[in-house]
Length: 93
Image (tube, rainbow, N blue to C red):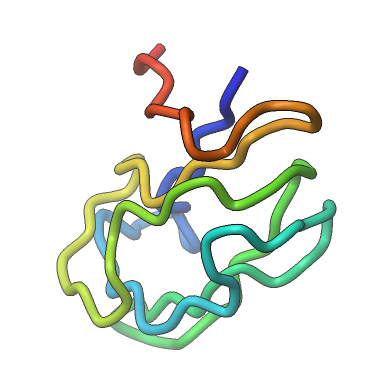
């Protein structure tokens, strides 16, 4: 089952941020703790780490995109054995 990566809340008051830069590309394998992206808030630029492992199946939000709301699905990770080309966003909980 695909794993949705959502825009994280990097502070208690963060409502949106800028996806400044992707540090991975589609097809890259990632493990827990790997750096995925740099996200800018109104106060700082922070790195976003993977908490799951798998393959980056699809990047949904391009780097440089401003005003990405917290909770927006920004990418999808395919789990081991899944065909990354066939992965679609999992339904929102």
